Amino acid sequence: HTNNTELLAFYVALVAPVFCGNVLVWPTEGSHWLNVKMVIQELIHRGHSVTILVSNASLFIQPKAETTEKFEVFNVPFKKDTIANLIEEIVALWLNNRPTASTFWQFYRELGKLSKSWHQVNRQMCDAVLTNRELMAHLQGSGYDLLLSDPVTLCGDLVALKLALPFMYSLRFSPASTVERHCGKIPAPPSYTPAALSELTDHMSFGERIKNILSYHLQDYIFQRYWGEWDIYYSKILGKLLLLAEITHAIHIGLQTQSLGAKVQVRTKAVLNFFPPKYLPRGEKKKKKGGYERLCRYPASPGPRALRDRGKGRELADSFNKNTTQRSEEEG
Image 1: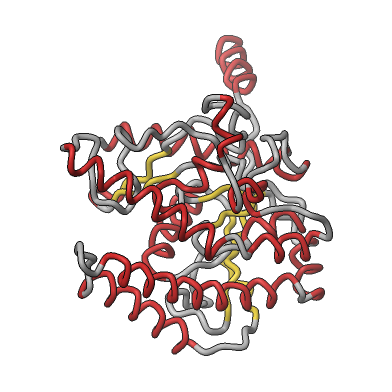
Image 2: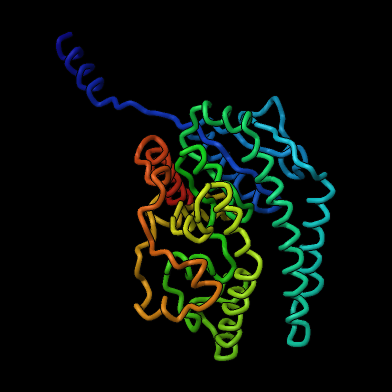
């Protein structure tokens, strides 16, 4: 009897408290939502509570009462047809009008127009949440520990900053890693590293390397032309001069969803940490003129206090990092 009591006491001493987090999700559309949805399912599987912000015009997110997730619905001044038409035009352009040597600039000109239309819709979504004092007060008092966002649909980071929440991205988001290269200073030599969306690999012929270099410069131009306009919006919402690129110094978290086997793999060990200030040569920053000198002129800093939070949100991200990596290894 004494031995059993001692053994029970020993087991009790090994028990550690387990805390589940309360996660807020910023909405997105299309295939990006399917990616976020897989992360949500994994979080729920781990016992976390998930609440999804969703507009009344969302095409892919359908609030249902019989689901494990909770929903916070907000109203926007556009209809579902707006989202459906945009996605249809983007897919049609990408599938039916692939760029060739003669249609190269025309393709990206049309893609730029569609990107601008999407940003206009995206900004209306941002306004619908950030200017809704009642909704923001409700979210502030709901005790969220973390905000999860797909970076293609902007403002998840702004909502997190306004609510003083840690946040993480579901993927590395910019074509040709434009944001990561210019604002995060990650090394990406174009003769070696294939540009995202270029459909190239790290084994390239001389001609493919030339194509890769062109892809980098083209995506740089597109980002500067269409994404740089968000600087004004970010500064207006936060009440001070703060650039989009300044917030993207964070490596929030890199998740890559693989459809085969439905695995969720964590691609980076650094969760809610920040890019080191100097990865590239010292002269690199001095070479930047015009748009990128303006976009990325601030050095990497510790970031806003909300992003440096080491509390429950960090614990949740660390736990998710460890568990998903372990599960991927077991299934692989």
